[in-house]
Image 1 (cartoon, rainbow, N blue to C red):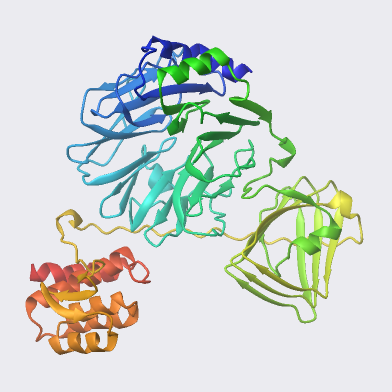
Image 2 (tube, helix red, strand yellow):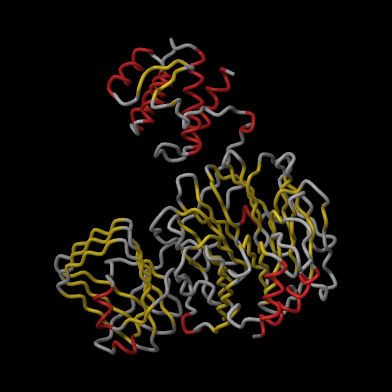
Length: 584
């Protein structure tokens, strides 16, 4: 009961100052120590709009835009910061904080220690999201541009672009950034020393992403989470969570989720912490700091008092993690031990594998006779745990259909040589994510085989820069179709109903308006045809200047943001901008 007693001492006891007769819901903070840090939790007088946590301090922003910082008073060099108004949100790294202002959506940056200053991009406006890692920081604009910065030349040295286009949401780790683009794809740029770029295959669209030092969490539309990267501290070792998730967080070597029933799970650094605050009210936010968590709950003084008086032992529980499962990197699903007998039945080995071995371990994958595999969107990662392990996998007359399925295989055992022989199988595996452990001590020794190991080379992400006055540019409106009550409108004029597609397409063709024809094609999901109409609009010099300008701006948006199944093509976007600007 160590954790719960600390919460009583540092948070819940203060809340008794509220009137016991009040039934008004108020924001309440609960501090959960996960290490040595102790930070006094204040009595909240205003509703909290945003909060973030870092090394030995956290900050709150109330609905009036006031930012207040609370520190561990045992650390003499900390300097708390207060900003009286106009703050919309904040993001704390370790000792630096990025703030976003309400009035003009611009940025500022400050440090919790004196005499430290570092570069951040001036003049950024229309920012909608900010994130901070250990040193690196990012900001995402309304135009889906992600700006990245850090001390010195750290961003450039990590081969991370200063500007990235078509970004929906992002997160920042120790020496990398991870983001979801507007095509709902996940990217990781920067350091890959801990498997940060071993991106799993998602079962539905990823909607949220968050990063710790060297591990990443993603929440998808099905409200399931994926975790990958460094697992040296158990930060990727998922606990059993059997309900939908609404919030994900990560910091240093720990992970946190909040479920829709207001339960909190924290894991990493050797511990698995479960907290059930559902009886208090809604968990609005929960943030991880360096070695603590702070939870913001919408509750009443009466409920807080009852929690203080009852000290229910089921509120918070702490369990030790199994350190034997702290492998080199990613654990995207809870893993199960596998022996030679059931391994063949439960999983399937590809002909080739991405190796992450170390300490001289070896792997040989063979296909004999006529193995046939349709590995659609599939990946297999082989990892060794220990020293001098050798494994040979032989596929013999194996057929499989493996669609949208990823697999991670961990090979364990000391100074052993093992063989897995997959014979005469005809597997169909669809949409399967598996993490399996092959213990060579249980498989036994068949023969010795020479070491054969191929390490894939990490590809470098090219630096992409495109400096254009985007904030002053109009939107082409190409995504927002002029449709109302199932009728298509051209310049405010009702052109007819959309139910008769052929008639509508002929009507648009008669107008000679290539921009309108493209919009209609995109509406009917005829994307190739829509692109051709826009290109005709550019090449038709007899077209009126306004329509030519519309087509150029639409093509710019498509290339720049990767709309309508097109890849992001910055050079083509720049060309379309030049056409547009000459007509402006």
